[in-house]
Image 1 (cartoon, rainbow, N blue to C red):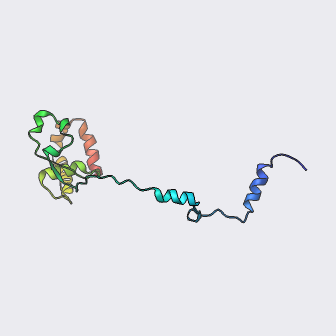
Image 2 (image 1 turned 120 degrees about the vertical axis):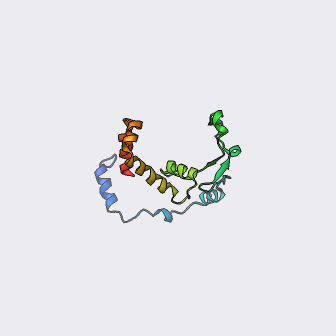
Length: 141
């Protein structure tokens, strides 16, 4: 009889013919010590301030007021917290114009695309080489 380690090939063959299966995740039984530690874990709840979409804040509530140029602060009356879903720029303009939260951003987007298409020469002169990039973005919208 040979002494030493078995070859990997033979071990793989033995494992393939085994009738013992691995238990699923829900079948593992916790030891009493593990079960006790699992019960002791309590989820820490943090108090958060939630604002609804489109909630406006007064100037004194703005946390980033120090980032606004002092000359401009006098012109800021309120701020609006809009959804950050990729249409936030359109949502900001819609909120400033007083459109509804639901579909106001769509109206703004459509109006901006129409403006660029109807007055292309004006915007080409104003934007120069950036106009082609903006026109490409409008094609996607």
